[in-house]
Image 1 (cartoon, one colour):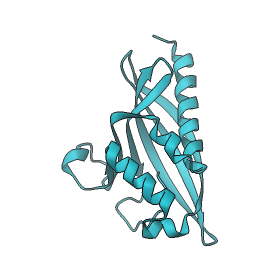
Image 2: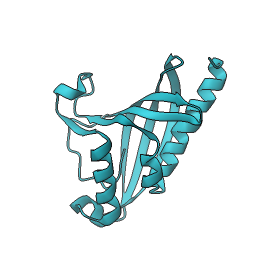
Image 3: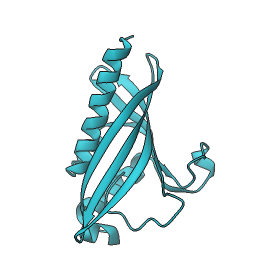
Image 4: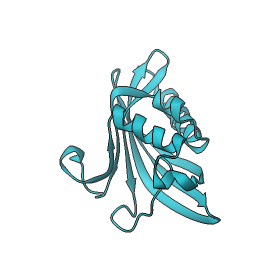
Amino acid sequence: MKSNTQLLAQVTEFIGYEADLLDHKGYQEWLSLWTEKGLYIVPTDLNETNYLETLNLALDDADMRRMRVARLENGESVSANSVGYTVRMMSRIRILEAGDDVVVARCAMTLNELRHGKLVTYPANVEYTLKPTADGFKLDQKVVKLLHAEGFLRTVSFIF
């Protein structure tokens, strides 16, 4: 097992890389970061942990992630008709669990979106479940807990 400092640096690099891909619309490369059984989750309830049995804004398996990306790339959804620009700021990265088979990390994210000349900010806590591989990490689960998920959330044209 790696030292805590080395592992934190590798996890931080991975999280930054994923954020950069999403901000620059590198969706196909983003899809390649995932395990086949990985889940992308945006819950409606900040306190919920049983995501499979409750309502979520997103609960995407591999097929749904591919469909979501296809809609964003091809303009096949209302939200994709006016795709905005995003800038994610990731901070406070912390390792919650570290083993040879899984690494769980949590961080703060502030996602800023500019669309139609309006800037909207989405603050969230994000939890990553990562599978170590010979080439780095694969995403096995990503849970984005938006601070205002229970309230009004306008149509978004991006992946959190």
